[in-house]
Amino acid sequence: MRHFADSIAQALSALTGVAPSEIKIEEPRDRAMGDLAFPCFALAKALKKAPPAIASELAGQLGAKLTGITAVASGPYINFQVERALLARTVVGTIETRRAEYGRSDYGRGKTIVIDFSSPNIAKPMHVGHLRSTILGQALVNLHEALGYRTVGINHIGDWGSMFGGLVVAMKRWGGARVGADGKVVLDRAKELGIDIEGDPVRGLLEVYQRSKKVLDPEKPEHDPAFAAEARAAWIELESGKDGEIRALWRWVTEVSMRGFSRTYKRLGIRHDLVRGESFYEPFLAPTFARCEQAGITEISDGATIVALKAIDKGLAETPCLLKQRDGTTLYATRDLAALYHRWDEFHFERCLYVVGAEQKLHFRQLKAVLKRLGADFEPRVEHVDFGLLLGTGRTKLASRKGDVLVLDELLDEVVEETSRVVREKNPELAGQQQIAEQIGIGALVFNDLKRERIKDVVFEKAEVLSFEGETGPYVQYTHARMASILRKAAASGQGGATPDWAALADAAPVLIRLSQFPDVVRSAADHAEPSELAQALLALSRDLSTWYVGSRVLDQEPSVTAARLALVRSCKTVLANGLRLLGVAAPEEM
Ligand code: ARG
Image (cartoon, rainbow, N blue to C red; front, side):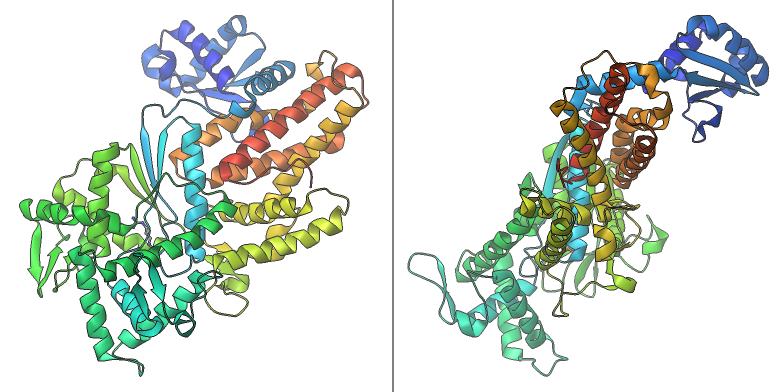
């Protein structure tokens, strides 16, 4: 459509002398009046005439200027209809030329987008909130990358904080953890500690962490003051930068956790450009702190260092940003502030997106307010891309089979297992079932996460998410596979070589229009950091395509008709595959 809108704008410009960039051609939601429309209000001033008069005058003159597009005045509007054969030839022709590149552009060339996503915490398994961040973040990376931006995906791992003091002490006390002669960490009593290092270290670490939390908590019967004092000292030693045993044990915990996360990332097709945990920014904490002091925005409150934010944002009157605790140790916010300046210095980003759940709204609001107090001119480029919760049936908290914290990998296993069963049932002959079940199962989960506005909560209803019908990933994948199957049959029977009769696609206008919108959808989804726009467009395309397909047989028609319809099928397959790829969902050829 953009192509036609551009020629209309050119023609209007030639008739009125107004620059084409000033002429906004709209794509109406309701197609009854036409494919495109031009509201003449904008020209009223320049032409010194009433919009309806302009519309009827220009509509008459446009006839001679436009080929294959009719212009009709309707009140203050001019409505345009593109001749169906021309529409088909243009849209299909463009997609057939660009193939996998269709939807890609250089819209963002020369600009960098930093995307902070996934960012799980060490010694805790990735939970469902991280799953959403991971899926949304990767889709945003893909979208921006397709638009020619330089994308920098950063995994801001939670590998720093006072809890690590407790964890390290727990490892020493309960597991006999020490640094061996070769510099490697050994656990003399790994069994007692309950960590299965080879098998499932992440789960074991979680248990140690949870146990240590109880021991540290003065309110709990398990509380052990000596342990707590040692943990405190260990955290202070970590923050001091000393490279001794404590640090070696901390490093070990980090590495073991990261190995666990990598397995999940691999299954989900996640790629980070940089894995920089909070600890990475340690060297930049002091300079960040100094920056705040020099700017004169810090205050001491109860022994802690804070930045008051009331003057910037009244809603933050009661919640200043805490930069340093009484004991001098830093906080999550301090590290985020340091990270942000580091990123700005390194990348001079166009936007820095934080794909983090809505429960951290306050944190990011504070962070931006601190930037304002610092006079950082890049503050508007920093955006919290927040999202709702992922819930189980009946909006309950998603839990594992055992009823405790849900470990992501277990959820993935469960979904893939179920998909395997469905696939076996539907298509027992299918080759490579295991791989396809993984693609469909994970695709279903990912799509379910992306299909609604991100701020909305997502309910995970297994049967519904995996259904081949309705608003699901498998439905889009299945539509794609059906197109692939038609093309295979055509190839096997040698059809499709004739010169296409584009007029035979007159009944496919809704599908053609969807196809033509794809590049704009990609752009808009990226601009709004809203992958759901793309997911919804793919669903709509699949629906319109199914409707068309029911009424119009593709194979075994007049050769020129079959050729045109096959070309459309190929275009649809291309767009579905390109779109799914951008969302991080596989597009199997068969299912
Ligand atoms: N690790 C944090 C959490 O799990 C998320 C970090 C998000 N990124 C950031 N730069 N704060 O809650």
